[in-house]
Amino acid sequence: MTNPHLEHVPFGETGIMPDFASWHTFPFEGDLRLKPFTPPVAPEPPRHGAGGVDCGTCARPDASFVWTDEHWRVGTTKAPTGLPAVLFLYPRAHHDLVDMPPELAAGYGPMIQRVERAYLALGGIARVQQARWGDGSEHLHLWFFGRPEGMVQLRGTFLSLWDDVLPPVPEDRWRAGLSAIAAHLAEGGGTAHV
Image (tube, rainbow, N blue to C red; front, top):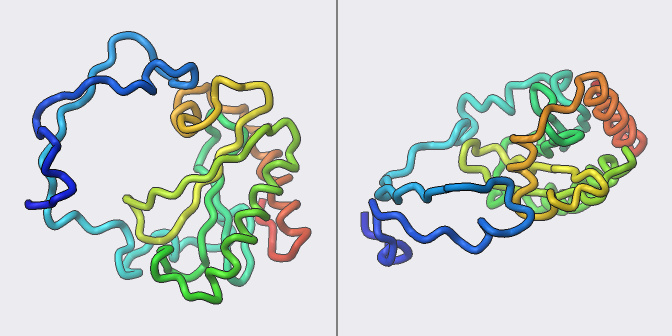
């Protein structure tokens, strides 16, 4: 595969550990090694639900989400993780960001604010970080990670990694938090499902 953006990458070799490995917020320490770079794959494998075909997000019933309305749905993980909640904002219709119709895109920013405000309403949350990767699924989904107040080591870029390595939140507290988030979202319309 010829890609001018990759001509400088030494495939099969390992590089030097980046500066962020020494940051206070980096979740790991000790002897770490960078994996060798693997050659590019062309064509790339299709993402789940490509073209809206067999899209698991589209097929899910509203009751499997935290909250829904006519244009948006908010979901979560199947079980508790290390943070109070991990939320996902999805458009109801099958779109990625690049092909979202302008009228739906006009509501995207306000929905991001709305979900963040609902998360912050739990109390004890210093910041809510958002992330969009989308390499696994074509259906647009924006992640929301809430950092508990005082947990300054969890600040910034690595919050999603900390979520994976922290002990899971007790299930009753996780469910109560989701219920509170759903109720807060429903105050502005739509339906809470937890």
